[in-house]
Image 1 (tube, one colour):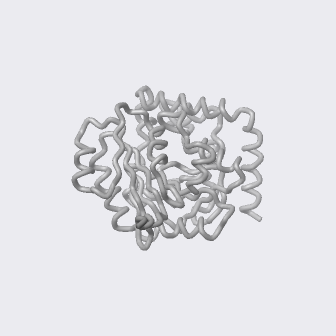
Image 2: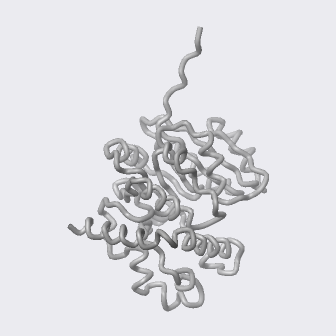
Image 3: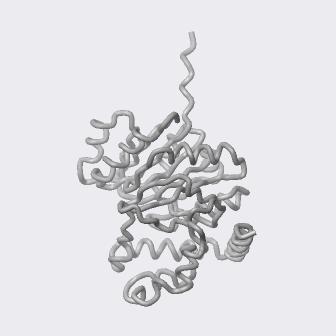
Length: 280
């Protein structure tokens, strides 16, 4: 007699962590609490943690599939989670992020109802409930300099930065955008199989590259503020501009500009079209 077919999985949640047990306690609990009626699998890729993250996860969350890496390779580790994913959709969720009631179901419903949507991202709020601007236009070439000491003292609220952060856009408006922060992204898993997941960067700008490639494949990237996710966004690289993480972020920014140098004009054209469509 043949074995029973494995139950269908709606969402595969991929989390990458490095010595982040405290963050994971909230993150994993939010998935357990707010999966709703969806069949969800969670895959934790551990980036060579030096605390007891792996032991704790296996002990307290046996339902979570844990992948142990021998070195910290940053967000590129997501590919190891995607290799195990079985869901119709996959989600990148940062360890310092937490789902709220109805958020996951709302995002899944959005992809179910709109075949042209390839990726959706929720409204992000901080621990204090304050809105985090998670939509982005294509980054200006001098953005890292403008948003880090010492020039950020004068330029953080300049017009180019505010435009990049889309501060001129209604944060309650559902709309296609050029890219969304990677703290929480839900997308069609088959896109990862077809395009290959982002794996060229340690930290930063992987979210932009991923969203741009999804659009190049003919799908929309959509901001969905009817779903809310809490994100303890600290911008450590801006606070410590000479740290290893900050330098890695800068390298990834320059790599993004180089990788998309040919397509930059197309990205800017698409961005203008999205802005016009949103105001029509």
